[in-house]
Image (tube, rainbow, N blue to C red; front, side, top):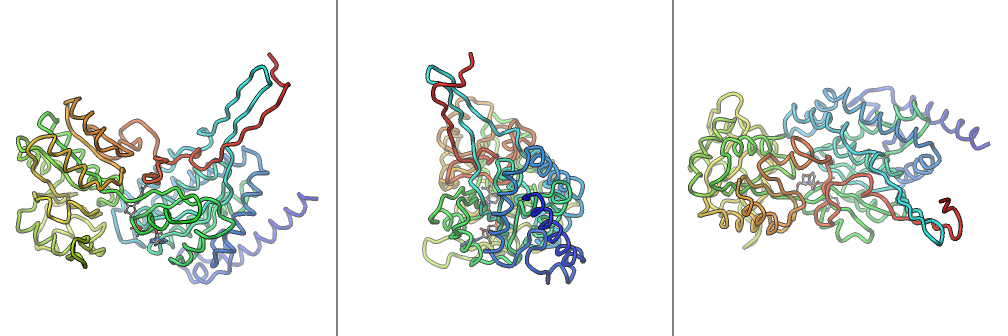
Length: 476
Ligand code: NAD
């Protein structure tokens, strides 16, 4: 009976979807579709209702089908990385095309069902089994800096543990996120019959985010974004896993391998034009190697601005605080632009291949305290390693997100690790090493910092459940 009903529902959905899905990305039909076009909905209520039905279906499906769904998302992100990366670049107009594409390729390494575990105890009273169960429908808020990669990464983590998700994407990256959702759901449906494992709000606003925050059908939130949304999620009336902002400092001491330090700072800070929340945002280098480090930066794709040029760029990148003691206001038009574009704005022509601008500043320059998300990194001269660590602590602002050190002094490294207390702490490599890119460990696009879950994985999105059998089933 059940199978027949499901089969009929599937056929109806298929026909409706085909009717509504004649055009491709950006076509008239893609923007004027009816609700439910392969998971893209106009209203939060309908998106949650569909994801709720999708989750029921997922729980009744085989684990083999669940694995197939994850594999499809990985496969689409890999085989369509060029096209989807280009779409994301064209829509958001921030970052670098090569890295937009590379970030989609990283999705194949995101942890899935292999991270799930079951624990058992066996004793005089029988046995107990601990299983990690889904929450249901998870409300996910995604950033413009990595719109589709964050959605795909959240999908793999959340669906691996038996959840579905309803997404409120950043308005600036919503089209590519919706297109990803359509492609994922369509291919998954065709391969497994599973529907709406992810749903998305077609035209996201702060109101739709708020509706998801307060929806009775959404028991858990996962929010990836800056200070505003992190604060809103922390104030929500339900549990939120919050992947908040960072301002990662780098300390370079006199024992460091200077060439490696320069190469690492460029690799991390220039990645996607410094959009990564883990990216190197300011450097505190000790006096004795300061000049040597500045020259080394120039050998690895950096271009040094002089004092006057730094002042000019600062004036374009930030406006003064609107209230005494407040934050300088970031000019979002410069976020994620190429180094050559930033240089051009102050009349500087940089050589081809320049990835990052850098220059000496003091700590009063807003590039030091603010999360600039553009390829200019300020370098501050320090008396010694302790002074560098002290400044790193101050300008990380207690986000407890990410910090880096280049040093061969194990005592200095240990001291910084203890003082910074950050979720990610990288020694002698670029920031990406902490997420498995040239270092050990797995990757995620949501690093839960204020709420402490860290690099999210399928177990992050589970509830503890214990099943106890009294007096039986200990078979030894
Ligand atoms: P953003 O804060 O402008 O937007 C993030 C998301 O939150 C968007 O979907 C936006 O529409 C929504 N939003 C913003 N204010 C909101 C509010 N008051 N209520 C509900 N929703 C709201 O950030 P962005 O520019 O898209 O992304 C960059 C920021 O995200 C940086 O601060 C970066 O450090 C952070 N980030 C953190 C991680 C992490 O894993 N910790 C990953 C990526 C980005």
